[in-house]
Image 1 (cartoon, protein in one colour):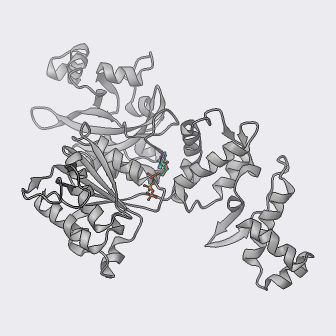
Image 2 (cartoon, rainbow, N blue to C red; image 1 turned 180 degrees about the vertical axis):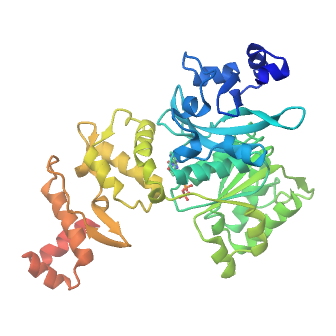
Length: 443
Ligand SMILES: Nc1ncnc2c1ncn2[C@@H]1O[C@H](COP(=O)(O)OP(=O)(O)OP(=O)(O)O)[C@@H](O)[C@H]1O
């Protein structure tokens, strides 16, 4: 059809698409693939043929269009709006299902009538949906995908991104993803850990200092702003910066210039700003602990990182990915029962805590299988509505050492028992001294 309209054969059209580096295809109004480039063929054909098959079948293995399979369909949205559409999808690739940023463009004839679509697949390198090599983000849950889509939208521009999320949710990895997806990706990525920086240290670290600027300044020192030239400056834990330093930061962001400590000449800064905090910045502003003007400067594009408990679908993937990344844990696995128990745990320390649990479990297991008995006691409680309730389903097939069982039980009973330790000891049939000794082992 399109080939006839344009006078080009399918072969010519496909070779025309080869000028596009990424996988690209011409899709008919009825979802059939009319032509595609070699990059598309390499990813989606798997040695077979893709022409005349539907895009949803080739990309997802679906028998119906994406919108009928519970996903947003860029083709349908393109048809409805007449505009270019971009959506993040999980697609079948030779490496398994991976994130793809799908761009759907309308193609019109001389009278302005929509005749087909040009689909370009931007492969997402900043995140993986299958366990594999590398140290970037992994995830495929709806909450993770929404966050990834926002990061990808923000990345190409120089807009200031503010990453908000609990500790251990992956804010540093997200900051890296913004950098890697930006036009500054070849430039430096400089992290500044803001908590614990005193006023003088803050200035000399950030701005650098001249020789003799203060006692001990024996030579000129390059500041982190200079180090970040042409790249990204990542200010981690920005909520911890005291007010006097906030003024200096604001001046830098507003004017784009700074002076080294002891220096006279104003220097031009050239960085993209990404900030992160686990604090509620708006609340800090209301309490007068964070400057409102600085808040608006750094929060042009806020992105909330989901807590691990908000992305339960990712737990298995994260476990496998983290095990592949922990040195020496490549051959280690987690038993089904232990995974079941982890699924019920709330992970207040998020992915960092999961990583710690796996590292610890790896050291405790002798046979390379992390079982229930290798999990820390806090995982053996189901947390519901903020209150600890006992986990009652100990698996029959895994032997739990009795002293661990005692610890679980003591932990559980002390959080629920309303009386004092004397009456608890009495009910447990031990002396108060014995109870104290046992309780002190829990800490
Ligand atoms: N999506 C993810 N996929 C794989 N690993 C992750 C992911 N998110 C976080 N991690 C891992 O979890 C750990 C904590 O991540 P990170 O330091 O980025 O968290 P954070 O939010 O910056 O924490 P904090 O606020 O305490 O600084 C790191 O080991 C990181 O590699």
